[in-house]
Image (tube, rainbow, N blue to C red; front, side, top):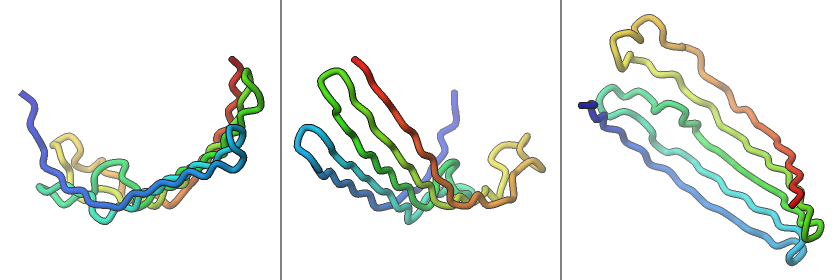
Length: 111
């Protein structure tokens, strides 16, 4: 039987939708800010929990058959774990904090 690990997470999240041109062009944005994200047992940060995440998308419905959008995601810094969670992690933990980074995706859909 798998062991259950206790964790604690608190944060703020919000979203916004702006119809720039009705039924043609819309802009969506959502953001998350983590106030606390850690293991109750070790105090380690939860894996893949950036301090903040911002997603924004501009969606263009060109016509009934064609749409295009651009998505941008910004991830905040991520702290490494300080303590091994399982025995075979000892000595292999990453010690470098990951700085903020972003990803851009362009999508063209034909139906």
